[in-house]
Length: 432
Image (tube, rainbow, N blue to C red; front, side, top):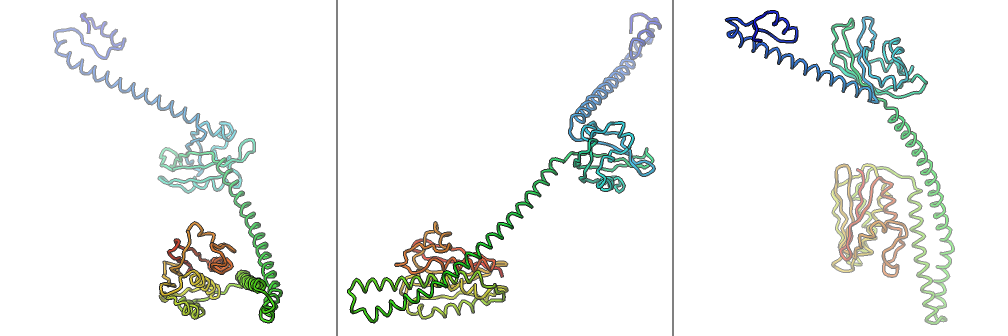
């Protein structure tokens, strides 16, 4: 609007970018509000359009920058009338990863020409199968322009594209997973090599263990003959010539016989330990109450003579597949251990009990004897390990080692709970 009424001035104003004009006349002031309002509306629309264009340019710039800098690439391809797919957009990372040029891609049409010949059918299968709204993810090998083999992870989705002959468009994102696959392959090779070495080492240890057990068996067996001679002649000497010996001589002879007795016990336990491993494992149902009663019957005389109260708290439990001899040996040794460390007299009690637990059965032998410090828990199950002097509590240190080996052969485990002066409870856990 000017102070002049010349229409030529209004035309010049529109050429200069004015949104509207009012030619000054008698009715100009009446039309002014309408013209000003329309000018403001058009100016706001123009400003919004300019802002939208600026935001679109910035978004496109960011997208292109990220796509250019990314080590992965994205693509879009359309289904053609012939059933093939042609790439109409792909990011620059494809060329950097594969070494091929844009011209070579245009020549082939689809970027999957880089797929390894053995993986080409797998790589292209989703393009033939997917329908709108469906997606696929898979990994396959590709061959770069210089002949290197790499692994790509391709994720794609299918959408409707009405403007193309095939009517479908595929959007995809591809990641180079060569390093991960190489690490996985290396891990598999390392694991396979480790398993092979473990098998070899296990076989060697089993062979050495068998040789050691055979050696121990042979030594123990061969020692029995001369030991019987020492025992027999020392007994004859004590019986027939004791009067010709002084007190020291008789004491020395008594110590010899005691040593022979301990040596005999040690040999028998060594043979029992060796036989346990060498003997074929039998498998059959075992009624635990009957087994426990037979073991108790073997020690009935000692139990009665020492006034020990024995409690049998075993419900009707059956182990469907167990070695009765091995399990009997374990239970017998635990009972002997409880009797050995129990107090003599009316206050001494030994309990044999059991209970089912899901797919396992737990047995226990409990006494109220001297007990032991739990710091030595693992030690007491090792061969030749003792917590007390042989003079105080006779034994060889092999009994609990036999228990552990017998139970392990049955697929179970053994442990104990105790405290000094509070007795001990030994548990056997067996699969039903």
